[in-house]
Image (cartoon, rainbow, N blue to C red):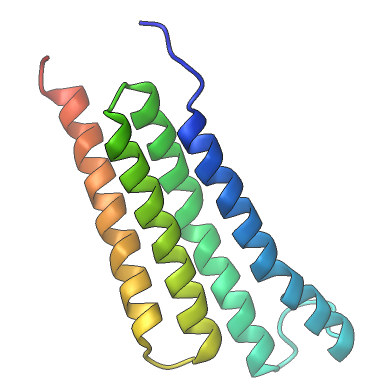
Length: 134
């Protein structure tokens, strides 16, 4: 079966790359201002910013791989758009929520919830496609 370039996933990967840069630049600038070369230097604000970026890096790569594989497997376009949109919304909400407060926040909660539901849904579709005969 021929596979097409997963262009919807390419768009969402690009948007996530831009979001990653939004998360990374403040870390770099903070490190330079505070002269912290490695780790967080005991700086709570830097530690939280680093955690936001690390959390992004823990979830987004696998989610984008799943999205691309589903798109190449000919999952209907609206599903791919929905999966990609939910992932992006979840990561933005989480980043905003955790960036604003180290404690509980609505953004952090709903961002995590959207990310987890999205991953579970994509995994479910992937399992369905591979185990259930057409």
